[in-house]
Length: 511
Image (cartoon, rainbow, N blue to C red; front, side):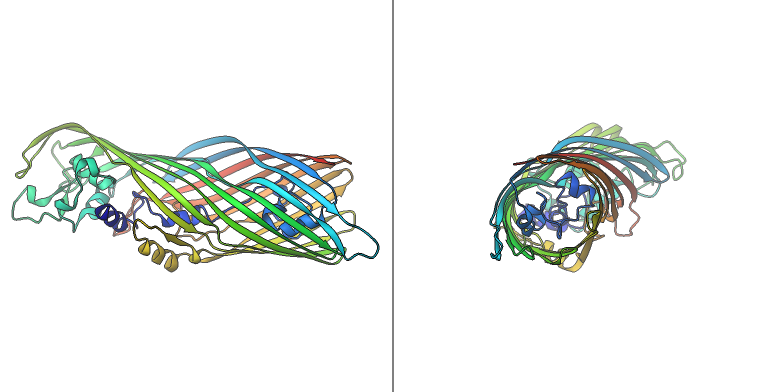
């Protein structure tokens, strides 16, 4: 365990290893999807109330109910990514059907002419708060470096005695050693050091190489919440919830290098390596819990202001990481004065499965919202969410996560998310539109997020005992991604444009 933890920690800055600090953003940046009505309004719900989504966003909204209600919200998610590296474009797509929300509200109003206390409502919901389903694919020619250069940099300074035995190997750098992609200089000359490394594929002649990778992620986060909201004089509403959060995440990466071209640096025929393929699989499951408190104030019928605090969610997580690496050599004669010469053709190695138990404390979320009602014509609403990602904290009883927490404190920033929406009422028809800006620390996510904008619209029909709502949400994000990092910052940079269209439908029953 000591050796495993030590090597994991020295690999933290690199993407070809499990870096736990990424979970701080991945699972803390929740985006409650909720009902079709709220999704059409850009997710803004803190000041509205009387919608099942408020059980999660601001439970004070339960105080505005005056009837029982049951809802179900299915959706379909259509995601398309376009990835560009070295002027080469590749498209990929993912389609996913899911249930965004199921809810039940039990209202107990107590209305008299003299009472200030007007009763309240209990609400229960199962609501999706994150969707990880996406496929990213890219391919391009890299004339500057290879993933093998990363393996060399990651190994330098550590003698071969520090490399775990093959049956205990758990990372790609170790597997590169057992595939002969890297080796210590002392196997060429005994006077050379054994903690500095070279590669027959890149150290003697510099090749141009084609690099390709496909990254498939899937899974989701759900929140199971029980909340209560009360009503004082139709002016002041308060609420709270108790929530259990679930995490189900899987990432599978497949990276390849092939088409090695040494013609720019070698006048003779030199082709030791044909290709190699590396895979990584990361699975994370767990649960967490938190509470939320909220208020809504309606000083006049045309105006509402709301506020909520969602405490830090403390997740207990279990992750499993494994990797494989295989190489196709060109009948290459590998010279080794220590271990003996080897004729290389097909080589392959796979890691041990590394399982980790740890906890993640997400940042506290503060939300403010306001809504202006235009009589019977509709309303305009605006929310702002405040999160300090630098307050995220990781802990394990099995190994130290101090370096991860230092990285979080030094690199994660405070962010503000904006949500806004408008509803026009043409009884029984409702027309809606919304916009949202979701921000995360730029250098903290695996996909180095730059921007994430959502535009939404929808319609609904409200009758006495039944209502239907429909929403279309268009999400556009731009990001950059690097498959590995090098000390001279010459690693390839992939520009990723992601476009997602969500179709959402809510069916609600009032009784």
